Length: 592
Image (cartoon, rainbow, N blue to C red; front, side, top):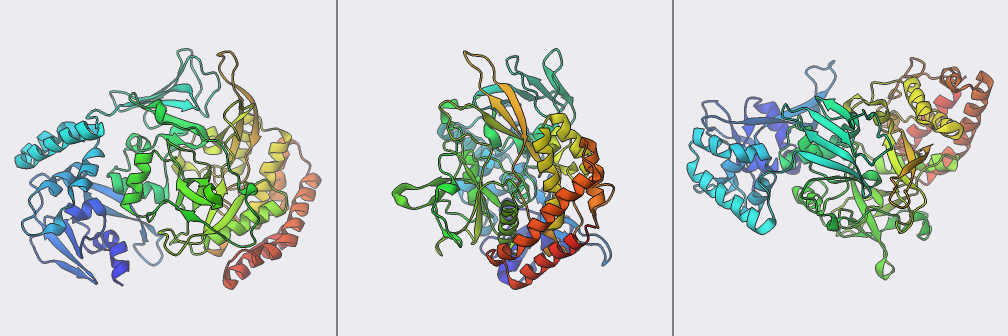
């Protein structure tokens, strides 16, 4: 019970006292310290709240407090019939948290944190927070704390290259080609301007004669879709005290992205970056019937603050999505397989997907669905289930997924892939990924030029996802690969062809949320799909109803033949195996 309370303390406090806000060490850690937590509010009481293993103390608020709101992973409903919504927690702002931690503790050491941790919080402050710190201190009577903050800022600048004025513009690079610049304007709007030597359009960003492709409120969709979601977003916001509305601040927390895209500030050290290439493939490893035992050098719990500070220090590759996942590269020194975090200074070739506390057996579920797709002839990246030694901080089993947006060599690559999600093709932002139809996606793919093979792959992707109960086939889980040829003799690169990407993030969501609907409407429906519904979409590229029916039936027959042996090898519990099989059987029989 004590562990549950500590893990969910922000949610418990948000429900117990909605007007209070987390303060002091609790605001920085989002968890208790030595069995104590701290809140502040205007309530005229000093009586602490007690939970199993945690005492929640009340501290007098500052005269002019600054309070931020963060979204939590926990959900709550206002009534038994209402839909659950994410809980929100009120927390001291990043600047206020720093000042609180710099105040004298007076016999209450659990109110503050070690100096090295406070240095990290100061390092993560935004430019505007640093510039207005003196004014905040003046109105709240924190002059002594301001003197200490000034001293620590000077220490950071001297010993860690700390910059008081972080840039408000970021250059977008593909490999070492400069694509353009994203800048924040004086009115808090954004502008993206292409480099004059870059000729390949980026999704949704059409170049004007002056090179500008976007100017307006909110990040362009291409950059918005780089931002993290779910688990990663919540951790970044909590660790670095970033408001959910500060999208540029969230974007700036990471410099390296999939497809060797980087965001580089004016002081970016290009000597630090190692571009990604696939040097070790999972297909080169010995075959294994069950999970492969793997060592790791990550050495931290993925939910811990320490890991997120380390990810930022290393410049780890940004991964989107709601599931816990980390960018890693493989090391086969001494013949043993070892995983390490990928970052600016080394390659990131694989994605490590970890068990989810919200969705039991998610790793086994995804392995089964990806493996089933491979067995029925669909194109998926190599995957491998792995386990860690008992001494590891990572939970087992986990799933390694090989990146398919990398060349095998950077010495003289003939073609270089660039992954573009359909959400970016459509010019929609990440929170709109469920707000489109399969017909609209089909039109975008046709316009992107994926060709007949690509259209057939998209069709199979949609049918397979319906048959296996994949209710998460949204606009960010459908993508194309731009195949780009490097220029010669100083010429810019050129677009060679556009392909439908291999399938990824395939899971049977129906075994977790029974009756889960198809993510996007197809022929106006998100349930009880029939062959005729798929034929309506297929007519857009000239298929007849009989051609469509033959392709649906052939795929359904292959799924029916392979689902039993795949599930037997999956590691799923008998209960989930049975529910998985019931989903597939019911949907195949319901096609006609």
